[in-house]
Length: 168
Image (cartoon, rainbow, N blue to C red; front, side, top):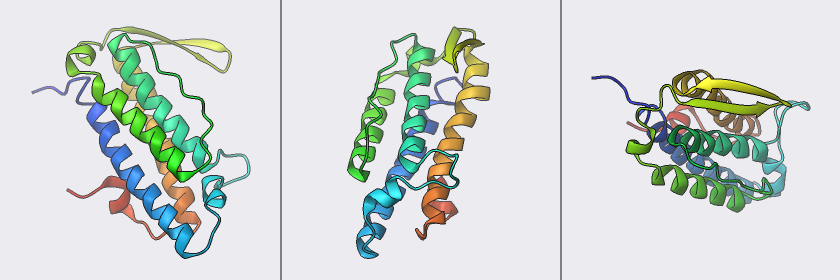
């Protein structure tokens, strides 16, 4: 049996967002226990030239919602990118989960050859559906979720591999 475009996208995003949401819950509890202003963690970064935790979550959600919408031939939902608290980041994840769960397999399957054009850094980049998902979205999505994890781990949150990948 072959892997469908839906199976390779929406369930992957859902699982990782559920894991990321749990990590953010732990981070909020950690900040409370250690008497750390939560904004310190929300604005933390691994290097000065990297985005902070908040932006990592924003980009991961942008990747997932954009992917589901584009593969399904729908309008991509626009979010304001104004989250500054753990609660707001959780709300953004929940909103993204609600959207991607609303896009059925019947809308995404068969999109392997759908033409997708993005504006990236002032230029247009064109893909067909399968390379868009496998070579653009998934690597970007995992990069930003991993970086969010790494920022929190670097700042002392006691999380490990199983927090990232989840239990089986």
